[in-house]
Length: 105
Image (cartoon, rainbow, N blue to C red; front, side):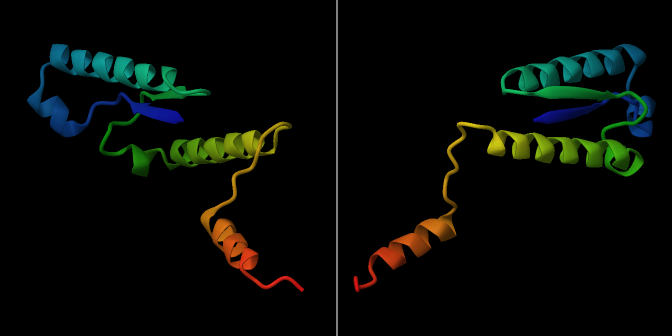
């Protein structure tokens, strides 16, 4: 899991909240996401200080795409490491059960 943590200030937040409240919100968000990634293996938090929550998927497409690529890459490496037992997906389990019902020659 990679948690992208946008800490930039959205215009609406800036208009409606004091600096102290914004800082407390960002501190809380940082701690929340850090705690979340600490609870999973290979969790990582990436701070995005130059964009806010409502804009980061548009303004930081590079960070979003890189995070997705990194998760897929890590999953692929974990899938192919020695000793990993591959679970069959549903279609393989179903086709195998259908094949097992075929008459023996």
